[in-house]
Image (tube, rainbow, N blue to C red; front, side):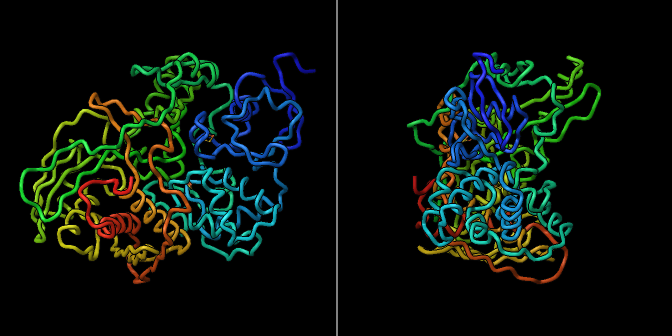
Length: 510
Ligand code: FES
Ligand code: FES
């Protein structure tokens, strides 16, 4: 029997009733404990992670009010027929179309609608359907390959070798297998015990703790996600001098999809925020586990700590902006936002560049982000020389890249391949990330250091239909396996800048 404040629904074939207030996504995840739909930007409605079917049509749950859904049938990825679900998992596993896996269940729900409608893999509708989604890891191409691979038998793979390659490329442990694409990645927030208290940032450096996530967020007050009309302007001035090439970059958001989360039992060990790779250094310095442990001890109850998208943008580390000039011989000067370890990273590839660290009012920065500092130095020197050459970062393999109007071509050598699908997937994702960074990514930060762009779309991640074809050639030279995708990222960034004619600031196309 439903009360007036309850709405009856059918979720994955089971009749339920949920509170009339709030969104479908909140009802699924927080009331029904259905975690198949993910929360990448909720309630912004911009990333597609929460896509489910409502009466057979794909919809984003985080902007769908429950009160409009009385009697409707909701299907999450967990509610697809076993055979269909298995086929999608195998397809993404076979192509490497899922890395951290946070975006994938939503993409599969949209693809499943296309499949039921008989849309062919080469139909432009498939790439256009991805406009409703964001993926930070894959660079789209292997996702499109997965649509074409649906229903084809997958080859046998050595999962341990695949996971070793994923660990080397992602720099944190990451499961590999069909279940990752189906939403069963090792996501921190999803293993929290039911009944745990929930903590969210209070906006003043402290934490609001409540019985449920909606209550905690309500008590903390809503920080409205917004996209600024202000441009992402490089904050640093070029060092004085005459330079063959000069470059200024903006604050850049890592833009991983699974927002930071941890939980802890009183007296226990906190759950790592790094369960699924995919953050490309953005979560490495997270203190959320310590917060979960402290709050669990204080409240003598298990506590979940969960960041919203807006929280991640405001408190998470950004790529440090730089401004530099160089000459063809490799000399020059680079000014960079003061960041622990950044000068060493730059000098590892550019020993003759003078590095000056300066204090800039703005968000926190981190040298742990993918190739931070050294990718900028590689590009600056390539711009001065007029060619990219072979790129090798600290502890990485070697990569070469070419960008023209039709394609991004990459050659990479990083020792024992271990698993070609995973390595290729990471290299394509890195190529997309490098291209996207140079041409489109950056966030607007005011003179007071406040971030103006809080929505996930405002980060500027390039969409599937705007991404050039990416061709990866892997040099199978044996040897100790080392990271290859970071060198690919830097090489493609430099090659993209050269292709755009070495304009003096990034992003070049926005
Ligand atoms: S969580 Fe709903 S669109 Fe991002
Ligand atoms: S696999 Fe798409 S965001 Fe990680």
